[in-house]
Amino acid sequence: MGDLLRRITGGFDRFQRRQRVTAVSFAVIKRYGEDRGGQLSALVTFYGFLSVFPLLLLLVTLAGLFLHGSKLENTIVNSALAQFPVIGTNLRENIHAVSKANVVAIIVSLLGLLYGSLGVTSSLQNATHQMWRLSREAARGFWPRMFKGFQLLGALGFIVVLSSVAAAMSTVGRQYFGGGGLLPRIVILLAALIANFAGYLLVLWLLAPDDTKLRMLLPGTIFGAVGWTILQALSGYLLGHQFHHASQIYGFFAVVLGLIFWINLGAQLFLYSTELNLVLAHHQWPRYLFSDEPSVERSATSSS
Image (cartoon, rainbow, N blue to C red; front, side, top):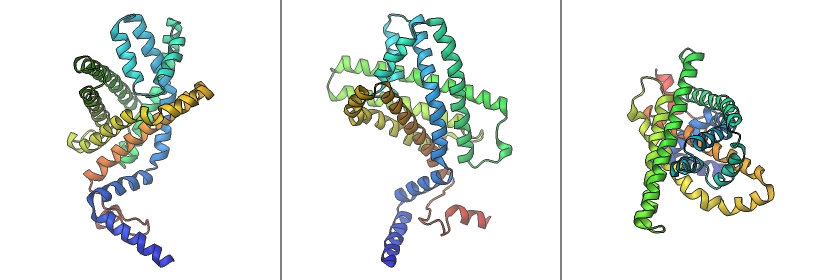
C-alpha cells in the first residue's frame, strides 16, 4: 500500500513539474506556505477590520456634509460599499445611524481610521518585505514606513474614486442599453476590471522595492484584478441567500463575520498575487512535491 501511494504521488509530482500551469501554481502555493502567508493575511485582516468602520463612517459623514442630497453622494458611498457585496447594505444602515453626529463622528472616525489604516499599511509592508526575502537592513525606518503608509492610503482613496467612475459607467450602460441585457453586464464587468487592475498595479508598485520594473508586477496584477472581479461578480450569487437568513438570525454579528471573511479573502488574494510575481520573475518553478527533495531555490543557492 505504501509503495502504491508513493508511485501515485511520484507520478503526480512529475506531472505537475512538466506542465507550466501546474508547476507555477504549485510553486506559488508552496512559496506562500513557506512565507507563512496565512499568518500574514490574518494580520492584515485584523487591522483591516479595525479600519473599515471608521473609514466608512468618515466617508459617509463627509459625503453627507459636502454632497448632501446629490447623486454623487450616493454614487461614492455605493461604490465604496460595493467592495463588500451582500453585507454592504447592512453596513450602510448601521454606518448611517452613527454618522448623524457630524463633529463627533469625524473625530472618532479619524482616530480609528488612523490606527487601523496605518496598521494595515504596516502589516502589508511587513508581508511584502518577507515575501521579497529582503534583509533586515533593507527594512524601512519609522518615518519612511509612515510616509509609505500614507502613500498606500492615497492609493486606496484613488481606488475608491475609480470604483465611483466604474459605478457611473455601469449606470450609464444600464440606462443606454437597457437594465437586464447582456451589454450592461459586460460594461459593469469591464469597468470593475479596469478599476481593479489599476488599483492592484498601483499598490503592488508602492510595496515593491524601489528598483522593481512594472512589467515584473503585471502577472500578479492581472491575476489579482481578474480574481477580485470574479469574486465580486459571484459573491452575491453564492452568499446572498445564506447570508440573508443568517443576518435575520444573528443580526449584526453575522455582518461582522461576513466582513472578516471578505477582508481575509481579499488579503490572501493580494498576497498570492505578490507570490506569483516573485515566482515568475525569479523563475522559482518547478518545485518538488516533497520537502526532502531538492527544490529550485535550494539548487540555486548551492550553485551560487
